[in-house]
Image (cartoon, rainbow, N blue to C red; front, top):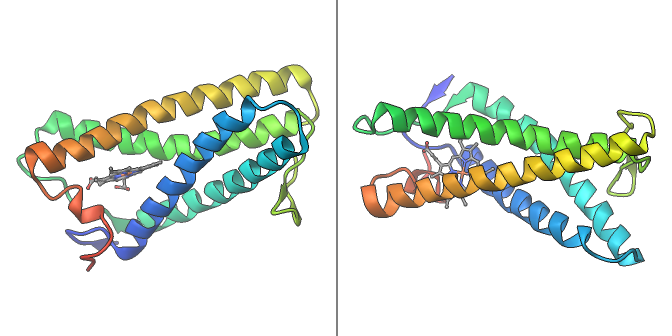
Length: 180
Ligand code: HEM
C-alpha cells in the first residue's frame, strides 16, 4: 500500500479520463433517447454502449489501483462529519460507476440487442429477451443516472467550496501537474 500527500499521476489520469467519459456518456444518453428512429440514432446507441462497456472496464482498473494506493488524507481541521460526507460521496460515486453500466448491459440484454464492443467483440447477454423486464431496467438505468448527476453536483460543489472558500489544497492536489 502506497501512501502520499498527493494523488499519483495514474489516479489523476483515471479521475479526469473517467470524468470526461462519464459526463459525455450522460449527455449522449439523454440526447439520443429523444431522437426519432433513424440510422443516426442507432449509431449513437452503439457508441453509447461501446463507451459504457469501456467505462465499466476502466472503473475496475481504477478500483484495483485504489486498493493498492490510499488517497492523501483529508485536512486535519476538516470537521469529522464533513470527512464522513466526503468518504460516503466517493463510495457512492464508485458504486454508481459500477451500477450504471451494469444496468445498461442488463437492459440491453433483456431488450434483445446484444452489444458488440467497437463492432468487433460480442459481449455475452446477461439475460434472456424479456420486454417488460427491459422496460423496467431502462427506468432503473435512468434513475441511477439522475442519482449520479445529483451526487456529482454535490461532489463538484464541494471541490469548488474547498478551493474558493476554505482555500485548501483539496482541488489542487487532484489537478494535472505537480505530481509525486
Ligand atoms: C463524472 C465525473 C466525476 C467522477 C465520477 C468523480 C469521482 C471521484 C471519486 C470517486 C473520487 C475519490 C477518489 C478516491 O479517493 O478514491 C474523486 C476525487 C476528487 N474529485 Fe472527482 N469525480 C468527477 C468529477 C470531478 C470534477 C468535475 C471535479 C472538480 C471540479 C472533481 C474534483 C475532485 C476532487 C477535488 C477530488 C479529491 C478529493 C480529495 O482529495 O479527497 N471531480 N472524484
